[in-house]
Image 1 (cartoon, rainbow, N blue to C red):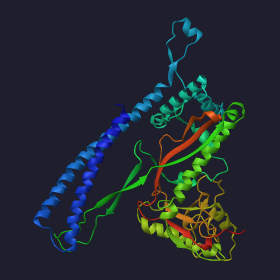
Image 2 (cartoon, helix red, strand yellow):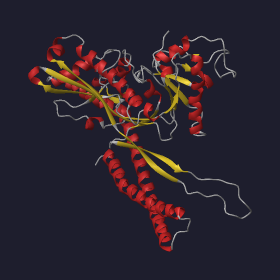
Image 3 (cartoon, rainbow, N blue to C red):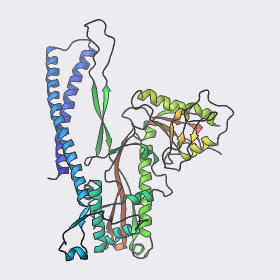
Image 4 (cartoon, rainbow, N blue to C red):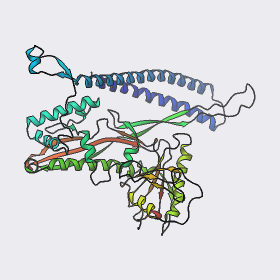
Length: 471
């Protein structure tokens, strides 16, 4: 049993204990609720039931803490092993004519081994993409390079799950796209993933189709002590487990054998576009997915006007972060961000006014309501709104709300959670499923999960005031 299987087995052993603990907690809560509803103390039987359940919970908590510590210990061991593997790859035999002559054939040298695919020798990924397809066609040299690349990724990332997860039914298993290619391919004319890149990042668990976050549903209390030696305020804290589903963002393309064997740059062009499409799709899901997407969970601040102006919109640009701050209070103060479509960002800058805010704003010049940083699309914060709220411009925001309307979002950056596969960039897999038509399938996919509502706080400006702007 390898270390990943050990970690999985310990986590699997924790699951029934967590379920049992929840059932016991529900039993205690039921007694308390009944007593509160009837304004009475618990009966002797109920008191014994609560005491027994609480004692069992304490025992379960001790076991869970020990198992959690064991998981941490195993994960630390895994990281140390990965570091040792990386170090071992820097020590490799070097034989020269002089050392061989002196009998030093097995002498080692310290150095850096060249990667199989590198930006200086394969800038656009042509060799990588061609090797993916050629390996499927039986080219053993290409397959050897792909295998060597996979081993390099395994060592450098400290992860070895991708070659387990990516096993398919085709003739060649999945491989990891080199990071420098993903960085280069992100520049295609698509909406990319500005919001996703700004969110709080977590590693996606190695197994399972859900992720969990704890949430305190009942907090402790404090109050003035009524008199000396009298009881002080006490409220039992309670928590719950929030769950987000693991989703898959994927795209595919069938390449003709003729295009692969006789075309120029066919595979790398297709892979480039698939990576770009998948990145945009992930971000679009985060924004627009029904029920759980940012648009669905945000509380609406209506802006209705047939002839909208930036001056009219101005109070709403403060109402959004004000509502977020009121919800978050002292939790992650000052980390509110705004997310809007590029057409709204440029429209705001196009507006002129003869009036200005009563209050001066941090980082904003007198007689203006915001500041443009002049950054490129997808390159972090584009500027700030009133009260210094930084702006993310994201063109995955739908422009089809109402009558060609977009929306402006305000959210806590720290409470915007995104789990992504630790093996990112996404996997690529070639399968020979279209042999009779001389076709080859290329597939890009990624696993992820997200959550905005551990603390209900997200806000959005919406309404007819955000129709297609005119310049």
